[in-house]
Amino acid sequence: MLQNINEHICVSRHSANNHERWICYEPYDASSNNKRQTWKRLTGLLSTSEMQCYLDRSYSSDVSKCFTSLSA
Image (cartoon, rainbow, N blue to C red):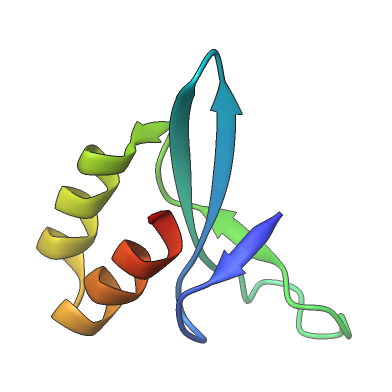
């Protein structure tokens, strides 16, 4: 399930064998007639710490803080 961080970024959590992995997405605007937002995958499966580093490098500290609260 996608969890919105803000209107431009969302993440999904994947758990297996006691390991959490995350994927980051951004809006995909190619199809403007859809009633439902379509998301484009930005990353592959990343560990929690790898996702935190990715968000720190790519986005504002607010995005990173939101992810911290989601991943806790």
